[in-house]
Image 1: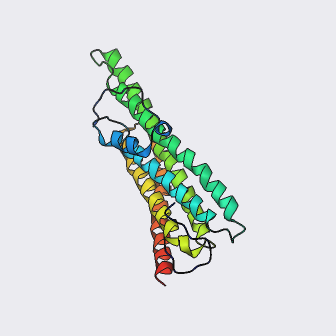
Image 2: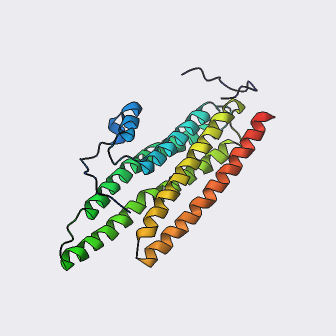
Image 3: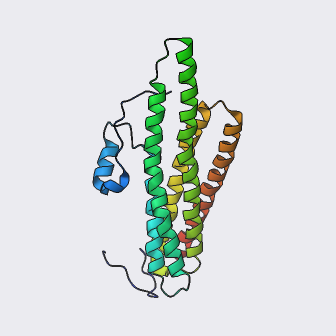
Length: 226
């Protein structure tokens, strides 16, 4: 957090394999250390998609804190409440991503000894792949909301929290960029052109959000350096 002006309260140090999937733990049932340790293990999930969702949650949390340290603005309480709503939305997507990976792994693990089995397996893989595309698609939306709220805060927040708003922007940018990669991997494996077209439109939205985030971060840094 920067401290160039004293206009508000200071913050004190307050192609696909089929690994075996067990019943996934929920992110809300763990502390951050155990969740990160589980991500670092040889378990197939949580992985990159969940990490992106966690980034979005952290960005939203930073904005809630920043709004609460900007009590001179009439917008602060509303902004803090909106940011708080985005945190569980993002964390839910971390669990959804892990669950979708489990379903996709199960589909790839189906037998394929006969023509009937191969047809059933192919259909199941396509359905699971479309399902696996939903969490990153939704994450692009959540990340874009975090970025939109950050843009609002830059207009009226306590200058002492500008660096925290910038950190929220970068976290949201990482979330959306991660969602883009995850989405693109799933799009490549899909055969339904109508679904592919819809997901590519969402990916284009994500690309714009990443570019907007970079520009917003640059503007905040310029203000911090003034």
